[in-house]
Length: 266
Image (cartoon, rainbow, N blue to C red; front, side):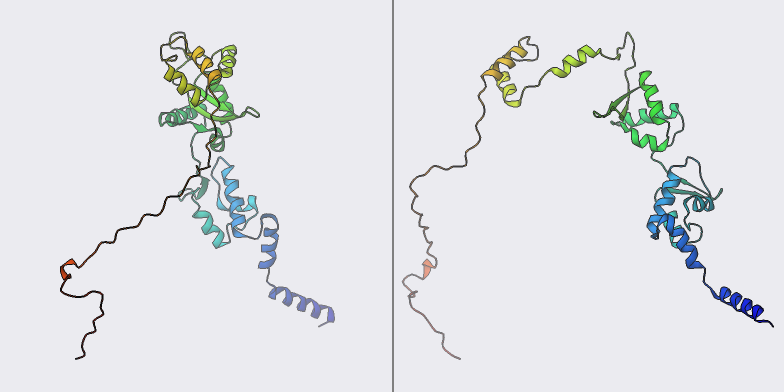
């Protein structure tokens, strides 16, 4: 056998003994981190952003995680409270807070939550359906819902079902901006002025002079003084002497209690 063939055989034996598992783990960890929890976050977040269920192998390929080979990672993924598994189809899906895919189902969900006494954050609705903000704006124009927006940039914040539909008979139409500005310009009196006006009798439920009474009271009301922590100085009273209650009165005259008595030894 020539030296070249001997070297080739030796090289093959070295390759046969080489452990490639660490190489595979290093290439995978480069993109998604070496920690199992970090890889779990990648897999769950991708499934959260996907509206359709996925196979386990596809999730592992897209997220570049050993989800289909690492038993620890797979167990954490299956036991996640937001992951749903369908054994019939062998597919995994993300469990959102709400389950709807059209505007009609969205309105039904908003009505259900409003009847319970609260609205729904638009952010939570968007996580369940990406088209939710656009559908909410359409429902607002139709008068089906009421929304609150952020002060800074006017983004949708909360949505409520509008129980009073716009109409000539039932009302429910949008108030004109002029009246809204006048309403927000009104200043609510503080508690001191309000209580003083009510006590003076100038303000009542059916009184037409309520505003005048409040204004006059506000002008006349003195500024409340801060409570003082100083104490009045005076003569200190002498400490009282407690009367001692005398016990064992029934022994008086029989035994001298001022003496010490020692028991006799046995």
